[in-house]
Amino acid sequence: MPALRSEQAGDVLRITMSRPELRNAFDAALIQELTEAFSAVGEDVRAVVLAGAGPSFSAGADVEWMRAAVELSYEENVADARRLRKMLETIDSCPSPVIARVQGHALGGGCGLVACSDIVVAAPDTQFAFSEVKLGIIPAVISPFALAKIGPSSARRYFLTGERFGPATALRIGLVHEVSADLDEVVERILGELRTAGPEAVRHAKKLVLERPDGLGTERRIAQRRTSDEGQEGLRAFIEKRHPSWASRSSS
Image (cartoon, rainbow, N blue to C red; front, side, top):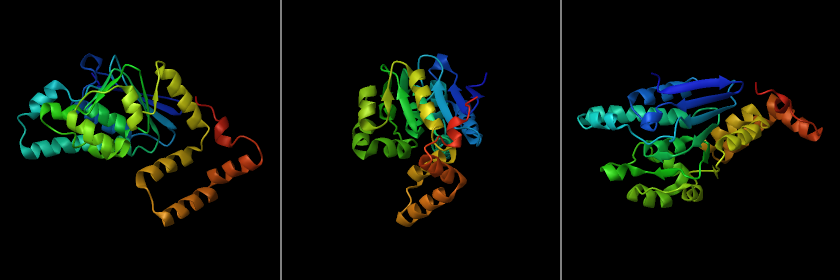
């Protein structure tokens, strides 16, 4: 059975990990399917909602996959890690905003998925952990994405201890943006906000965060957006006190 469900309704693509009996733990198949799904996100997608079926978002690495990894050579381990890195980079650089809908557990690589997402909504009972040190390894491949989210100070604690922490801590350190018992209501509200923003502007805003251009680069980017068709429409709509054309588009 596929480890992933990918369903597009209108301008929203919902990608759901579907290994609930294994708490959506990673194996080679799920890593490949996630890479392919995010690589295929089209320009007609205003947002991607990443979720996990069942009681947990993702509990990290699958036990059987880890058992097989014990026997891998150094070179085989490098190749294995490279596939995980490619998956994380594909999610992180997805042109459309990625909203993570998180519940239950987000452990190890599951925390890496959270760190790669642009907007993260978590249930009140969610448990997070960069738990790799508990297994005698380190959160190496997910570290660039996690450090970009939580910073070195929080990483110095949670990378080193591998301890579990709840959504209040995740919110405080910047891993999570909102905590709610009604995840779907919050996700829909965020989707509504995204639909009032210029579709191209949202994609360029994400690139701005990821690429962090210098001063000259920022001058050129704002000039490009102001002179673009979308920028002209947005500015004129503001001056004329009307909704821009994209805000009235149907989501279906």
